[in-house]
Amino acid sequence: MARYLLLYRADPEAMASMPEPTPEQAEQMNAAWNSWAQQVGAGLIDFGAPTAAVSEGADRSVGGYTLIEADGADAVEGLLTGHPHRAMGGTIDVYELTPVPGM
Image (cartoon, rainbow, N blue to C red; front, side, top):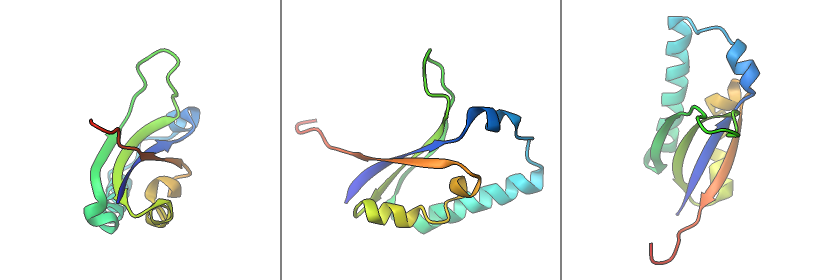
């Protein structure tokens, strides 16, 4: 199995203009993310966290990450079907983590 980095992207201006979710909406969003995590199961290495760009020139569209393990790119894409970030209109970049020999 290979490990993959998922980078969650969204338009920074669109994200900034979104209103704060109501408690009910926040609960629904959390439930959707937890449901997705259960779907991934043991392949979920690190649920991740939201990110905030702090260096000059950093890509402000990256809003979070997750690390997963899967049997290939097709398996990853299958796990991303119905992903809550995509349901919100965001995109997900997928990167395979390649091991460095001797490290």
